[in-house]
Length: 220
Image 1 (cartoon, rainbow, N blue to C red):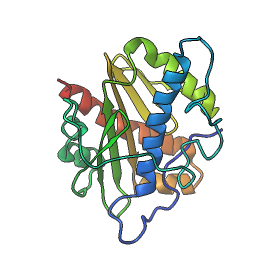
Image 2 (cartoon, rainbow, N blue to C red):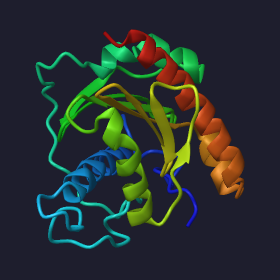
Image 3 (cartoon, rainbow, N blue to C red):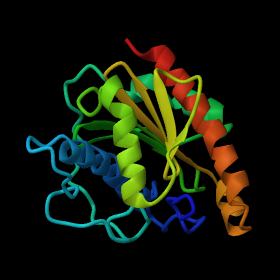
Image 4 (cartoon, rainbow, N blue to C red):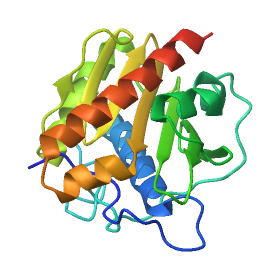
Protein backbone atom coordinates (compact mmCIF):
# COMPACT_ATOMS: atom_id res chain seq x y z
CA UNK A 1 0.00 0.00 0.00
CA UNK A 2 1.33 3.42 -0.87
CA UNK A 3 1.60 6.30 1.56
CA UNK A 4 -1.80 7.69 2.49
CA UNK A 5 -2.31 11.38 1.90
CA UNK A 6 -4.75 13.85 3.27
CA UNK A 7 -6.15 16.11 0.56
CA UNK A 8 -7.39 14.84 -2.76
CA UNK A 9 -8.59 18.16 -4.10
CA UNK A 10 -5.97 20.90 -4.54
CA UNK A 11 -8.69 23.52 -4.06
CA UNK A 12 -10.33 23.57 -0.62
CA UNK A 13 -14.11 23.88 -0.51
CA UNK A 14 -15.35 27.40 -1.08
CA UNK A 15 -16.19 29.28 2.07
CA UNK A 16 -13.85 27.25 4.27
CA UNK A 17 -10.60 28.66 5.55
CA UNK A 18 -9.09 25.23 6.24
CA UNK A 19 -9.38 21.75 4.70
CA UNK A 20 -11.54 20.35 7.48
CA UNK A 21 -11.39 16.79 6.18
CA UNK A 22 -7.63 16.93 6.62
CA UNK A 23 -8.11 17.99 10.23
CA UNK A 24 -10.44 15.10 10.94
CA UNK A 25 -8.19 12.65 9.13
CA UNK A 26 -5.00 13.44 11.00
CA UNK A 27 -6.86 13.69 14.27
CA UNK A 28 -8.24 10.21 13.70
CA UNK A 29 -4.75 8.94 12.98
CA UNK A 30 -3.48 10.40 16.24
CA UNK A 31 -6.31 8.86 18.26
CA UNK A 32 -5.91 5.64 16.26
CA UNK A 33 -2.32 5.46 17.49
CA UNK A 34 -3.44 5.97 21.08
CA UNK A 35 -6.00 3.18 20.79
CA UNK A 36 -3.35 0.88 19.37
CA UNK A 37 -1.14 1.53 22.37
CA UNK A 38 -3.98 0.87 24.78
CA UNK A 39 -4.97 -2.29 22.92
CA UNK A 40 -1.43 -3.65 22.93
CA UNK A 41 -1.09 -2.97 26.64
CA UNK A 42 -4.13 -4.91 27.85
CA UNK A 43 -3.92 -6.64 31.21
CA UNK A 44 -4.47 -10.09 29.73
CA UNK A 45 -1.61 -9.72 27.26
CA UNK A 46 -3.89 -10.44 24.32
CA UNK A 47 -3.94 -8.48 21.11
CA UNK A 48 -7.05 -6.33 20.89
CA UNK A 49 -8.64 -4.48 18.03
CA UNK A 50 -8.16 -0.68 18.21
CA UNK A 51 -11.33 0.79 19.65
CA UNK A 52 -12.42 -2.59 20.98
CA UNK A 53 -15.29 -3.22 18.58
CA UNK A 54 -14.09 -2.32 15.10
CA UNK A 55 -11.62 -4.05 12.84
CA UNK A 56 -9.37 -1.94 10.60
CA UNK A 57 -11.06 -1.22 7.29
CA UNK A 58 -10.62 1.35 4.58
CA UNK A 59 -13.06 3.56 6.49
CA UNK A 60 -10.94 3.35 9.63
CA UNK A 61 -7.70 4.12 7.83
CA UNK A 62 -6.48 7.73 7.46
CA UNK A 63 -8.00 8.39 4.05
CA UNK A 64 -9.60 11.75 3.33
CA UNK A 65 -13.37 11.72 3.11
CA UNK A 66 -13.66 8.17 4.49
CA UNK A 67 -13.43 8.79 8.22
CA UNK A 68 -15.74 9.57 11.05
CA UNK A 69 -14.87 12.90 12.61
CA UNK A 70 -13.45 12.39 16.12
CA UNK A 71 -14.82 14.42 18.98
CA UNK A 72 -12.97 17.71 19.16
CA UNK A 73 -13.24 21.04 20.85
CA UNK A 74 -11.77 24.38 19.95
CA UNK A 75 -11.09 25.10 23.62
CA UNK A 76 -7.42 24.36 24.42
CA UNK A 77 -6.56 22.54 27.61
CA UNK A 78 -4.57 24.09 30.41
CA UNK A 79 -1.65 21.74 29.85
CA UNK A 80 1.87 23.02 29.42
CA UNK A 81 2.22 21.79 25.85
CA UNK A 82 0.96 24.37 23.36
CA UNK A 83 1.68 23.32 19.76
CA UNK A 84 1.02 26.89 18.61
CA UNK A 85 3.97 27.97 20.75
CA UNK A 86 6.14 25.04 19.69
CA UNK A 87 5.57 25.99 16.04
CA UNK A 88 4.46 29.59 15.73
CA UNK A 89 2.72 31.11 12.73
CA UNK A 90 5.99 32.83 11.83
CA UNK A 91 7.76 29.45 12.00
CA UNK A 92 5.20 27.80 9.73
CA UNK A 93 5.31 30.68 7.25
CA UNK A 94 9.10 30.55 7.17
CA UNK A 95 9.10 26.83 6.41
CA UNK A 96 6.43 27.00 3.70
CA UNK A 97 7.57 30.35 2.33
CA UNK A 98 4.02 31.74 2.23
CA UNK A 99 1.66 33.74 4.41
CA UNK A 100 -0.83 31.64 6.34
CA UNK A 101 -4.14 32.38 8.01
CA UNK A 102 -4.61 32.85 11.71
CA UNK A 103 -3.96 29.87 13.95
CA UNK A 104 -6.70 27.51 15.05
CA UNK A 105 -6.49 25.49 18.26
CA UNK A 106 -8.25 22.20 18.90
CA UNK A 107 -8.11 19.50 21.55
CA UNK A 108 -8.51 16.04 20.04
CA UNK A 109 -8.31 13.18 22.51
CA UNK A 110 -4.98 13.51 24.33
CA UNK A 111 -3.54 15.78 21.63
CA UNK A 112 -3.36 19.56 21.57
CA UNK A 113 -3.58 20.57 17.92
CA UNK A 114 -2.46 23.74 16.14
CA UNK A 115 -3.53 24.48 12.57
CA UNK A 116 -2.37 27.11 10.11
CA UNK A 117 -3.86 27.31 6.65
CA UNK A 118 -5.40 29.39 3.91
CA UNK A 119 -7.70 29.01 0.93
CA UNK A 120 -4.78 28.50 -1.47
CA UNK A 121 -4.23 24.99 -0.13
CA UNK A 122 -1.23 25.70 2.11
CA UNK A 123 -1.74 23.87 5.39
CA UNK A 124 0.28 23.03 8.50
CA UNK A 125 -0.87 20.91 11.42
CA UNK A 126 1.10 20.23 14.60
CA UNK A 127 -0.03 17.96 17.43
CA UNK A 128 1.55 17.50 20.85
CA UNK A 129 0.84 15.35 23.90
CA UNK A 130 2.68 14.00 26.93
CA UNK A 131 -0.05 11.41 27.61
CA UNK A 132 0.28 9.05 24.64
CA UNK A 133 3.61 7.25 24.33
CA UNK A 134 6.82 6.98 26.30
CA UNK A 135 10.25 6.65 24.76
CA UNK A 136 10.07 2.94 25.52
CA UNK A 137 6.65 2.33 23.95
CA UNK A 138 7.02 4.57 20.90
CA UNK A 139 8.73 2.03 18.61
CA UNK A 140 6.20 -0.70 19.33
CA UNK A 141 3.29 1.70 18.88
CA UNK A 142 4.55 2.93 15.51
CA UNK A 143 5.15 -0.61 14.28
CA UNK A 144 1.75 -1.75 15.51
CA UNK A 145 0.08 1.13 13.68
CA UNK A 146 2.01 0.34 10.51
CA UNK A 147 1.02 -3.32 10.73
CA UNK A 148 -2.63 -2.44 11.23
CA UNK A 149 -2.59 -0.05 8.27
CA UNK A 150 -0.46 -2.43 6.15
CA UNK A 151 2.14 0.24 5.42
CA UNK A 152 5.74 0.88 6.47
CA UNK A 153 6.89 2.89 9.47
CA UNK A 154 10.12 4.44 8.21
CA UNK A 155 12.64 5.56 10.85
CA UNK A 156 13.83 9.16 10.56
CA UNK A 157 17.18 10.00 12.11
CA UNK A 158 18.26 13.16 13.89
CA UNK A 159 14.94 14.16 15.47
CA UNK A 160 14.21 13.81 19.17
CA UNK A 161 14.81 10.40 20.72
CA UNK A 162 12.94 8.53 17.97
CA UNK A 163 11.09 9.56 14.83
CA UNK A 164 9.11 7.84 12.09
CA UNK A 165 7.48 8.73 8.78
CA UNK A 166 4.10 6.98 8.84
CA UNK A 167 1.01 7.50 6.67
CA UNK A 168 2.18 10.86 5.37
CA UNK A 169 2.82 12.15 8.89
CA UNK A 170 6.12 12.76 10.71
CA UNK A 171 5.96 11.35 14.24
CA UNK A 172 8.59 12.37 16.82
CA UNK A 173 9.13 11.24 20.41
CA UNK A 174 11.19 13.27 22.87
CA UNK A 175 11.11 11.78 26.36
CA UNK A 176 7.40 11.42 27.13
CA UNK A 177 6.38 14.09 24.62
CA UNK A 178 4.77 12.89 21.40
CA UNK A 179 4.67 15.21 18.40
CA UNK A 180 3.33 14.81 14.89
CA UNK A 181 3.49 17.07 11.86
CA UNK A 182 1.54 17.32 8.62
CA UNK A 183 1.91 19.74 5.71
CA UNK A 184 0.01 20.25 2.48
CA UNK A 185 0.83 22.67 -0.31
CA UNK A 186 -0.33 23.13 -3.92
CA UNK A 187 3.10 21.89 -5.01
CA UNK A 188 2.71 18.67 -3.03
CA UNK A 189 -0.76 18.19 -4.46
CA UNK A 190 0.60 18.66 -7.97
CA UNK A 191 3.30 16.05 -7.40
CA UNK A 192 0.65 13.59 -6.27
CA UNK A 193 -1.56 14.34 -9.26
CA UNK A 194 1.44 13.71 -11.52
CA UNK A 195 1.97 10.34 -9.85
CA UNK A 196 5.31 11.37 -8.32
CA UNK A 197 4.63 9.86 -4.91
CA UNK A 198 8.33 9.62 -4.03
CA UNK A 199 8.89 13.29 -4.88
CA UNK A 200 5.85 14.24 -2.82
CA UNK A 201 7.07 12.16 0.11
CA UNK A 202 10.57 13.62 0.07
CA UNK A 203 9.32 17.20 -0.16
CA UNK A 204 6.74 16.65 2.57
CA UNK A 205 9.33 14.97 4.79
CA UNK A 206 11.74 17.88 4.29
CA UNK A 207 9.09 20.42 5.30
CA UNK A 208 7.87 18.48 8.33
CA UNK A 209 11.46 17.87 9.43
CA UNK A 210 12.01 21.64 9.52
CA UNK A 211 8.85 22.08 11.55
CA UNK A 212 9.89 19.31 13.94
CA UNK A 213 13.28 20.94 14.46
CA UNK A 214 11.64 24.19 15.48
CA UNK A 215 9.21 22.42 17.81
CA UNK A 216 11.96 20.43 19.51
CA UNK A 217 14.00 23.58 20.09
CA UNK A 218 10.96 25.22 21.70
CA UNK A 219 10.14 22.32 24.04
CA UNK A 220 10.35 23.37 27.70
